[in-house]
Amino acid sequence: MARRFSTLALLATLTMSGASQAHQIWLEQTPDTAKMYFGEFDRNLRETSPGVLDKLPAPSAKLSDAQGDRPLSLNKTANAFTLSERAARDQTLYVEESTIPVVEYKVGGVPTRAAKTLAARLATSSTALPPKLTLDVVPNGKTGEFKVYYKGEPQPKTRVGIIVQSGWAREARTDDMGVVKFDLPWQGRYVLEVRYADKTPGERGGKPYDMLNYMTTLSIMQTDGLKAVPALAPAVPNK
Image 1 (cartoon, rainbow, N blue to C red):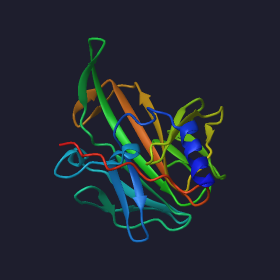
Image 2 (cartoon, one colour):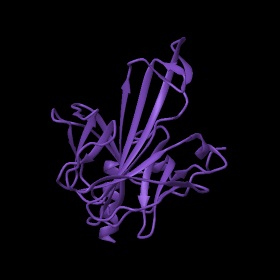
Image 3 (cartoon, rainbow, N blue to C red):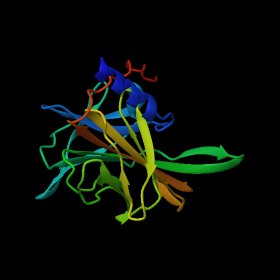
């Protein structure tokens, strides 16, 4: 009973709404498979196909270790993309979707054209990793310590969110070296999220854009700590 009370007290103290307010991609793996999901991790929302999952035209995936990187194939299923390999200890998976079409909308009545790049990484240990993705968040060598990069450069004062499927969430900013630290009180899976808006004009698929929005996640597993609070009931996928 005392342990249950301490768990609920932690949840009440540390829960923060709004850490994840948009769709993201993230990676999960079991002893047999590795999958990429599209939805909202903290709401236990996994989009499906036919449906919103089909809005990801051509994600790419790689496995990285001390020997280098190698491309993996992706097979779309009813609610995920299954990768052709999973990551072993001290290996990392990363995926990127950089072919989402340009969209147009208005900000304060002013037309804006934007492109979006979604990415995700899965790490199997706290070993420090080099950046691979354009916007990347990686373990930094210590449990609960991470580093954010954009185009290979550390990103200071950048907001980073961390969430679990019970709804628990926290948010912090990186220091001057691009490093951020979080307590990891629960056992189980954590997903970190970082965003970056590059306002350099460009072109994608033959259409110009005014800005390129990046969103990248990092999935990690924590074996120590309090027993995880159960995930929320699965949210209904969008049509």
